[in-house]
Structures are given as C-alpha cells and as structure tokens.
Image (cartoon, rainbow, N blue to C red; front, top):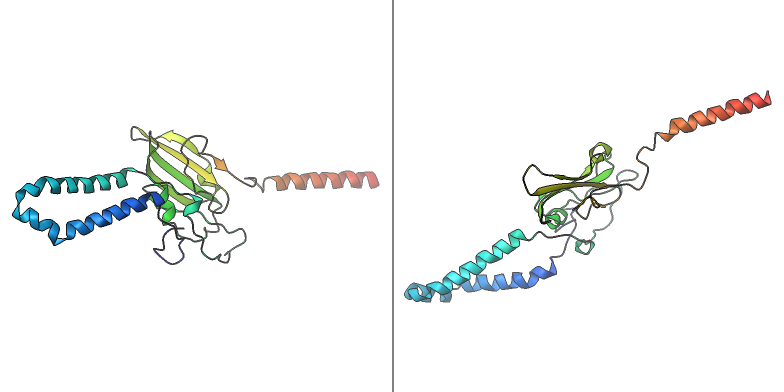
Length: 215
C-alpha cells in the first residue's frame, strides 16, 4: 500500500506539492558540495554571512518537513495485481504502528490479508489540539478491540486520542479527528449468531402448534 520497500506492497506517488521543494533542495545541495562554493569562504571571511543564510534556509526546510503532517488519499494508491483471497471473506486493512502521520502510515502499509480471526480495521489517532498528527496506529482486529471507539483526552496535556473501527476492504484509509469520525462503522449485524436460537425457538413453537391442530 506504499512505495515499494518490500515485495507485495502498494506503490504510492510522491505528493505534488513537495516536488518543487525537493528540486530546490537538490540544487542547493549541488551548490554547497561544489568546491567553487567553498573556495571564496576559505580565502575571504567576509563570505560568512552568505554561508549563514544558506545554512539557515536548510534548517528551515528540515523544520517545515518535520512539522507538517501529511494526509493520504485514494489518489495516492496504485493498486497491484489482485491476489487470491486466502479464505472466504478475506480483507485487507492499512496497518502501521505509531507512524508520524497518515501519509507515512498508509505509504508503507504491507499489502497482505488480515488474519482469519480478525474482522475489522482499527485506527488510533493521537493529535494536538490543533489537529496536527502525533501518532497513527492501524491494524486488523477482532470485535473486542472495537467496543470503545470515540475521542478522549490524552495523558499529555493538549493531546487528544480518537479511535475508530470499520468493516470492509482497506476501509481505514482516513483518520478519525473528532466524535463524528471516531465511530464503529459496520456493514453487517455485529451479533449475527444471536438471532439463530430465537429463530429456532419460533420454528419449534410453530411445529408444536401445527401438530396440535392436526392431531
């Protein structure tokens, strides 16, 4: 589900808004590594302010990259060839452990089916009050792990944790950011087996009534 770091992963394209900045940093690296750039500095100390400005720009670039959390959309997914479902009803989820943001999580998510004993896609999103992501965890889970969805205040002041679950193939692409998003979304009844005893009792009762009328 992300760039091809290993076999069986999804491939994603780089965000378009980063391409101009990447090219600028590449050109800057070529300039700094050039001997012609350093020669005047070694012979003339008056070039110090110019060098300081260039170093400052490099530091600002790193800071901007670190502080801006990136999101991940359907456009970032390039699907691989469909694989054989390992079991009936097999599904996949985006999976990661404490990724920096949604983009980093989904970008490197392995393209593998969830274990058979799981049924839902789980997402836990830790963020600042401003909405900036701090940590993203996604995994395949059974029903028990989806019984406490919603948002709560974190132990760290100014942080909030939102948890959501969903049913369906890679349904946990977006992040929960508020009570509206932090829900348990299912496409089928949760307790499918609970209705079977009731149906059987109704059938048995009907049979007894029918036998009583015919005898």
